[in-house]
Image (cartoon, rainbow, N blue to C red; front, side, top):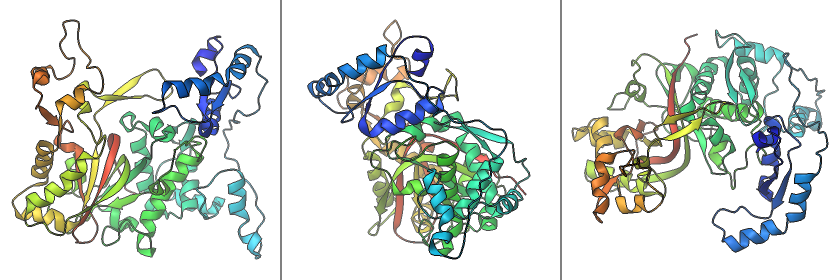
Length: 458
């Protein structure tokens, strides 16, 4: 839309009313805040054609006006500045004075809605001692507002979230992950779907940063202060650096409580399997962070399992959640836009994090199963009908009629009973052992790719 306007072709966007702020935020970020648009009462997804036509027809006069009128100059475009802006907020001992910083942030939409720690210059300087990186080093361009995620800006948000300097390297590594094209960062930010990044931590940094990997590891409480602060800090960065404000850059239809932040470490001490970062090519004594974009979670209750196959069947039952892979890999990999370019990067996905309590992993290990054995079992037993896959969209084919992707399976198309694995590879079942020893596990439905980054040794 913005590209069309910049090319000199008049255009008018049509947006659902609930997306109006999101539209304005996006065109602000693309440098064309006066781009014309009209609103209709409802999103068109799933609506009947007659209903959609009626909603659009009611806006015809405004559409014509948007195509023919000269747009007024707008001052909505964000100012760009090399220097970090400093604001002064007066505080005193009254209830209003103590809350003045949070009121100031709320007025500017610079918060997640929960009271923050004031990011004073001294506090930010102290946070920066948790890294060897220079304050103005840029880790990524955060969308949809194209904000430069400098180390200093990240430190400001880390202070606000309650992070300590020893936790700062984990946050930086998580943002290193988000910077990878396979994370499809832009789609995660602007999607109306309920999804959020989860930070998975491995290695010695977990203890150094004080991350809880035992009982209630994903819950509230003082014991989880590091988990909470790191996860929250990432969300504040996405809001304040990426301009992904609720209802504006973030048009999420319903929202998701886990969008406040998720960070958890693997319980490597009691896991019978090698830690997850070793699956990703790291050494046991190295520290690494993995980030996956997910929705959920759904609890897997496994109290009556008599053997490892019962446990695996309970886990596998979650894989038939609608769209949990669904065999879409047969049409080829998905792709993500690479920054502010026309390039796209293919990636394998989705990856489904399955957070197993140690006792669930032990059940399988005692039966002689490695983690890879369990992943292979899930891969072979979580299947979808080929007929259902072929019925949802056209298969990409070459001029000779052969499938462009996985032509070796094309002969199954005539078999009404043929099935294929829901996911392309066993590794997409991300088994991560954490929490206390119990009969529960959590399943997250992954939406895009995955990235793992080393944690800086400070």
